[in-house]
Image 1 (cartoon, rainbow, N blue to C red):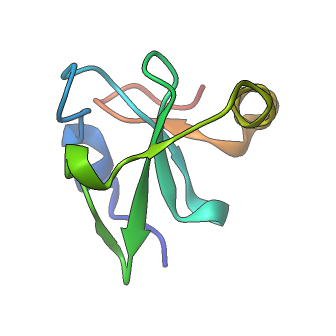
Image 2: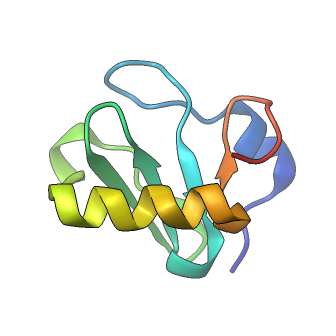
Length: 81
């Protein structure tokens, strides 16, 4: 399930308040600065710091490569990463 564009435009990391990367194909939002991933369950982003998942360096590299190839959208009103 894809998130609504208006929601993507306003989402930010609950911890550092910065933009996230939205991976629609993986149902997740990712903060590359903190190496934290937020799950999207049934179309609802779970934006709780305590439920964020730590991302390894290997997974971070994979996600950044995917984002660089157009596989992610940045939140906070900017299109694509």
